[in-house]
Length: 170
Image 1 (tube, rainbow, N blue to C red):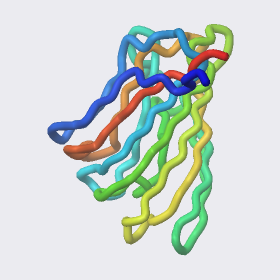
Image 2: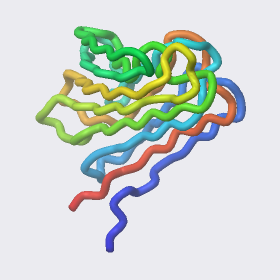
Image 3: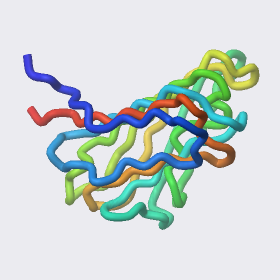
Image 4: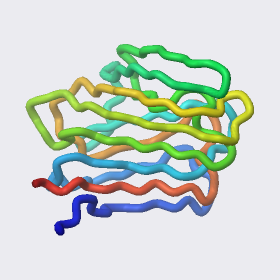
């Protein structure tokens, strides 16, 4: 059986970091997947992604819609014409162990906008325990070869891991 997920890069943080970047991403795959396991240093911070070709796009070319379920409530919202793609909602990534899974669809296609699906959650936050899913859009036909992660405040914590996979073409 052929290998579908091909590990391309992994970063394990040896100190707190404000940003994590994957660059020089090969266009040899159908889709990309990024898995974050870890924590952040400031409670209730949002996680953001910017992508681009050669450099990250800082223009107002990102939008997203999300739904989530928390221990006591449900929530939904949308963001349009943003300067980065918010891939979770307040407190969804916690100061203790959390997960974030991102799928970048048809990332090397140069005739269509790029779709990003994000699934996130934690079971340790007092205020925001729960899970959510987000559908995001980068309004560019450029192929993605760089992805940068950042937070609204604080840092990604020491010991957190980011793993980038290529999804093999069929």
